[in-house]
Image (tube, rainbow over all chains, first blue to last red; front, side, top):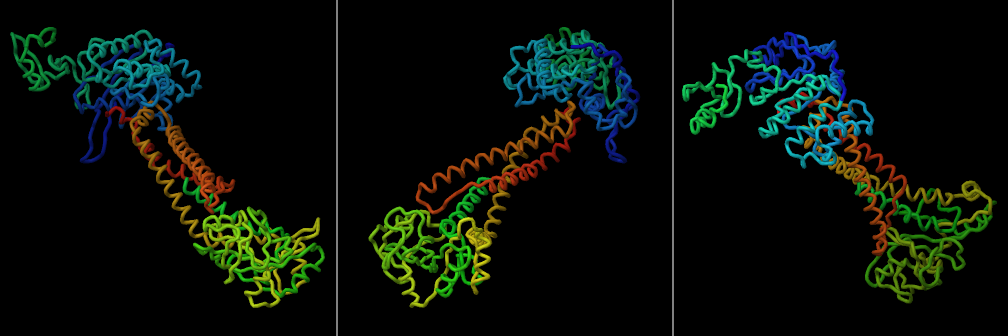
Amino acid sequence: MNDSTNDSTLRVEHVSKRFGSGETEVVAVRDVSLSVAPGEVVLIMGPSGSGKSTLLSMLGALLKPTEGQIRLGDEVLSALSENRLPTVRLRRFGFIFQGFNLLSALTVLENVALVAQLAGAKRGEARRRAATILGELGLAERLDFLPEKLSGGEKQRVAIARALINDPALILADEPTANLDSSIGHEVMRLLRNIAKEQNRSVIIVSHDARIKDIADRVLWLEDGRFKDMVAMATDPVCGMAVEREKAVVAQWNGRTFYFCSRGCRNEFFEDPASFADGDDG
Amino acid sequence: MMLVLALDAVMTGAEKRLTAYIDNSGADVWVAQSGVRNLHMVSSWMPASVTGEVEDVPGVDSAIPVMYLTAPVDTKNEQSLAYVIGLPEDAASGKPWRVAEGRAVPEPGEAVIDSAVAERSGIKLGDKVKILGQKLEVTGLADGTSTLTNSVAFISMEDFERVRGGGQVVSFVLAKVERGRSPGAVAQRIEEDVGGVTAQSRQEFAEQERRLVNDMAGDLLAIMNLAGFMTGLAVVALTVYTATLARRSEYGVLKALGARNSRLYGVVLAQALYSVALGFAVGLAFTLLLSAIVPALGSNLPLQVGVASLLKVGSASLVIAALAAVLPIRQIAGLDPAAVFRG
């Protein structure tokens, strides 16, 4: 894998996205600015409906902003014609999706090689590159497996290999740990962090999972389409979700304050508070 | 596709059988009453003297008169429609070209009938059949003289004339041309030299026969072909549409990753082409199997897969594939790649 990220800082400048118009207008993202340097891992968190998916779609050149500008290096993505966007997505972005989204009829090797072929690589070359990357991710023994034969962690590593095959400057991951258990989720996140640091690629992760905060260089909280200060955030000790302190369900135990996403989590906490309180940041 | 191929094979085989008597008559030129251009559903009567007049035309080597009527052959068990041909004793043309048993040219009081008709009716050599109201002894069984609708039965000219109550008339004159002469040119010369006749080369005469029957069956064939086409279209369209629908999210993922619409359209079109190719192959195999089995079962239904039929069904298959791909392509075109982030 090359270091191809000489000038590939992602710059998001005053970006907004509106859907509909008049009384039915919905503003999904409001005046968001962000800069992600090569090698940086940024975690974007926020409640459902906060605009995370819309922002991620715009960052990945899947959706054009209504206002503002998105640049990747010298290229203004938001100004590109619809016709050029597929090529940009193929060559400059790597995508990792929540449900892995591997093609069920293709083998592991074919799933990864296909994306290289879409970018113009010949079949043999694409398969060779795919086999190399999959080998580096510990999947050399799984090349001819169909996705249904893989564990969740293996599927996500295939998805990561697919994201890396065209040597992208930026990797966008949507809830990459959502379908993985805690330890595998951490393993995948460490892998993404290593890729960012060793290969100097930017990684932007959108997630609800506050347990992966430690692998990020920066954590941003998106709510109502705007970034908010993370200082005002806390982690629900039961479900691990990041919650806004102001709006959270609050409870005291053993002289400490705990913040919950819901009454259900608070009730579960009080069934065995000691087990949840250990290691919580309150 | 199977239906259309099988139907075409039946029609091609039937067409070939339809003109088997004309094709194997041994005549180069068929001379008929003026205006008569084929055998099916016609009546042709000319003065017997026409035979000699035809023989005198330059380029004609020999001429044989035959009588002709469409009438039932009444066996013990059934009646079957036949082209009844009255042959002179010394007939060199117009007689059965392949004899399974017995003699080819019947004498007075005798008949030569189709072997398949005889087998179906339990008729053997020496049995009696009733043709044109006369009881005749079967003295010959001919092969290849039955079609989908009728067979050819041969009786003596004498018996034929008796039924007609005498009269110096003939139905057709079958002429052989001299070596090196063009049958078409000689036919034209016969029309010029002999009054009140229509003369055609054997090929023209057979073509007229095929055209007439095709015209008669044309509407039915068109309906059957349309039904086959529409069924094929529906099956392939549903298959491709269902396959696309089942993989809708995967197409969305590919779009999100950067696959161009044109590439995905190509995938859908390829699926449609594979489907019709499979249908075509299965249809062809089925039709070839039918064409091997049906004659073995003693049926008069000959199936023949022709190049024209393959080209026609192949072209229709391509049209089906293209039409079947339209809906799925529209569906893919409408897929929003950003939906991949919305779960």
